[in-house]
Image (cartoon, rainbow, N blue to C red; front, side, top):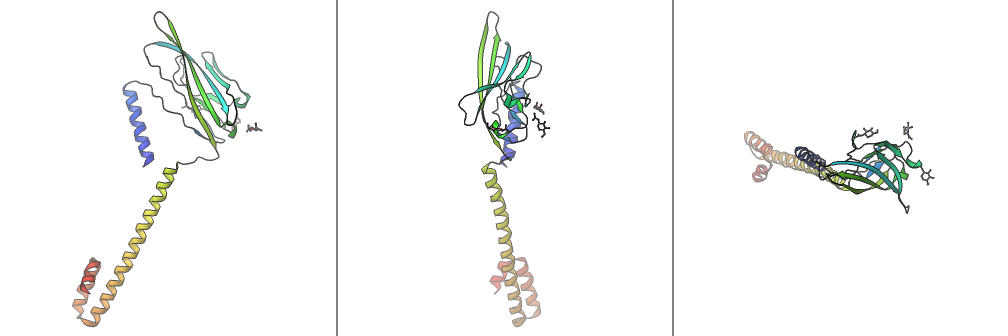
Length: 220
Ligand SMILES: *[C@@H]1O[C@H](CO)[C@@H](O)[C@H](O)[C@H]1NC(C)=O
Ligand SMILES: *[C@@H]1O[C@H](CO)[C@@H](O)[C@H](O)[C@H]1NC(C)=O
Ligand SMILES: *[C@@H]1O[C@H](CO)[C@@H](O)[C@H](O)[C@H]1NC(C)=O
């Protein structure tokens, strides 16, 4: 149910964004699985889409428990450059393609290790070209990444699944008890009827009892 919600909302947001030709800035995922790839998301929409602009991108990283950030990656017109041995050959560009006017600076981390846990910061160094002047801005976003051995699920989703099983099993047990109770009532009523009444009467009670357990209780 929760998943469906997320999908519906995502679809709605995407279609709205497309209708307005807008650029959306969703937050990056923050949980990576060791040994797999992970996309570090970073988006910065240009507020004035009609204004020409160029941007370069830098990614900085501070490992969990470390004091300082250091630069791990840059992306410019000339190309990309991984600037840290810890990430050598492990970063691919996942951002805007074939454009200097970068609005998506996402990168893809290959073969994630536990040492990749920490804080990532992306910087857009953007220059906007107005008629008579240039305007530079720096926009930054932060992603806190946790590396786990296996994908974990949200507590809410686990709780709702457990509740689902509990209620299904509960209903089944209740149904079974009800059936046994009714069956006993019916057979008890049947024996009584055999002893006391004529054959026709017995059949009437028994068939009534099968249709409706309460009817037998009244018949006693
Ligand atoms: C991101 O880059 C990785 C590695 O090059 C690639 O496998 C993946 O398809 C890319 N994803 C997107 C959305 O471009
Ligand atoms: C990433 O892992 C794959 C499969 O385990 C391996 O073939 C590849 O060489 C690794 N790449 C890097 C850069 O460590
Ligand atoms: C992780 O960091 C520790 C300590 O700096 C280092 O000894 C270890 O080799 C690193 N592991 C990987 C997979 O890079």
